[in-house]
Length: 207
Image 1 (cartoon, rainbow, N blue to C red):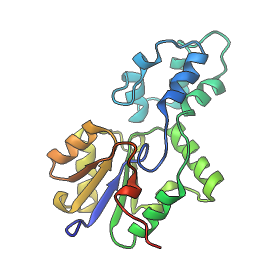
Image 2: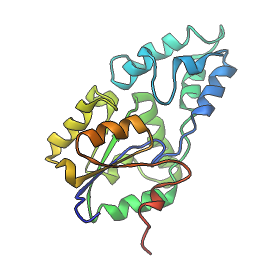
Image 3: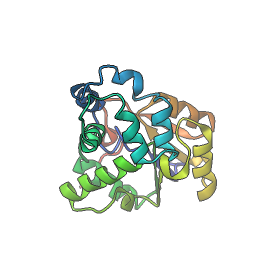
């Protein structure tokens, strides 16, 4: 870690606990039996890709999903099912981020969407009294805001160039292998974080 000056963190599965099965089960309860064909952790269909790159509004997204659920389903039920995957921010991980801020330039790079951002920041405020996950980072990059998403190389190059980061001095931590593969191909140092390991296994918090 001696030559590392910058650390780019993924969000879901790295800082924020998520469980995709909860959303899958919630949509099944709404009558969507083939939800895995519509969305998966690694590759969504065009609707989800467009949501994560800001090309469709939340209203359009909910309207499109409404075609697959059982008649009479309310929009708020669709939104609740979509958000069901978002769990919590373990306090130890937030403590680690706070300590790392004193040693490294920290950035967040997340494939996400406007619906989820509002909810996970609400979770952070409810559970930890903090207004936004962005407070831990020099800058937070969300795919729906920049119009690009991992694992495409353009979003990594965008973060590097905008902040003057050298790939060899930058560490990227993500739980999804294709995202890691692209970063490594650009010369970025990487850690593929796989459960049950967490960032606490990489960075031991100091007392």
